[in-house]
Image (cartoon, rainbow, N blue to C red; front, top):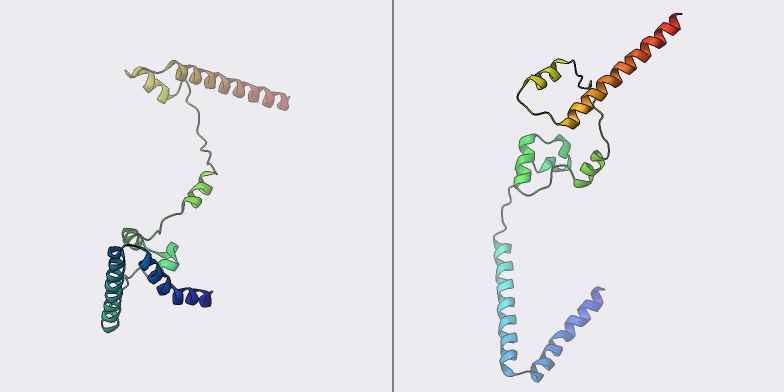
Length: 156
């Protein structure tokens, strides 16, 4: 691969020379001057940095970037401000979102203090919520009655 590239680079000046003869003289002068300017600029910048190598000071969190989970919150904030991704990846969030957590709560009942506060306040309660509370209350009563019947049958 390297030999092929070097072979092409050897013939590239000849090809540019041939094309330069085929196009108007202004374009040839432009190609020559822009290439000469770019070459001298590149050489000057290279020589400058060889003579004056830059002093790079790495931030204090640099060594801990390999172990992001061990970084402090302050180090993560500084790294994020510098544009380094230290937070959770999108794929991790997607995987985490595929699992849900069921929170067990006691249902709202008609006789509960919470329902009484809602009923006595000036807040308008939607009809759907009222019917849902009534149905959960009657379901809970049915479940309690069924459990009482089962326990009395077991005792007999």
